[in-house]
Structures are given as structure tokens and as C-alpha cells.
Length: 105
Image (cartoon, rainbow, N blue to C red; front, top):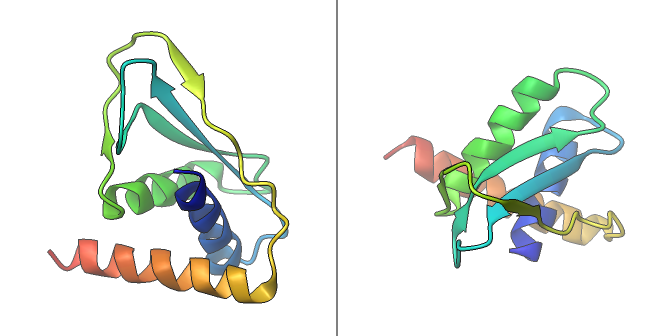
């Protein structure tokens, strides 16, 4: 999941020309694997709702199930943001391809 969070973060930065953004993923304590409660984009300079929707779509495209049962949650680790340009391009390509495939289904 940590790699997915970083790749979605890098994808948002590249796709929307941002200098920095954080993707916050919540999980219920009972969720495992690709189950999460929700995704929120924080510290975005503008249009955070639109960016949160894009991140939500990216996690669905990666095969995650997003369901909030209103039980107790915890936040998953944020991406540290220390990536090479090559890692950023790789993360962007991975998420962009997943989203395009998901939209075409």
C-alpha cells in the first residue's frame, strides 16, 4: 500500500502541476489487503475536492475497495516525497495506465 500511496501522490503532482500534495488513506482496523475506508488529498493549493476525487478514482483503478462502515479508522503513512525524477515518472505512468484501463472497462 505504501508504494500505491506514493505513486498516486506522484501522479497527482505530475498531472496537476503541483509542487507538493499529500494523499491521506484511512482504513478500518478490520480491513485487510486492498480494502480502505477513504482517500483525502490535503495541503493542496487549490481544488482539493477535485484532487481527492482523482485520488479516489486512482485507488479504485488499482483494485482497491473503498467502503466506510463508520467504525474506528487509522491513517496510513503518507508518502515522504523524496523520489528521483525517474521514480516520479514511473509512478505517474503506472497510475495513469491503471486509470485509463479502469475507465475503459
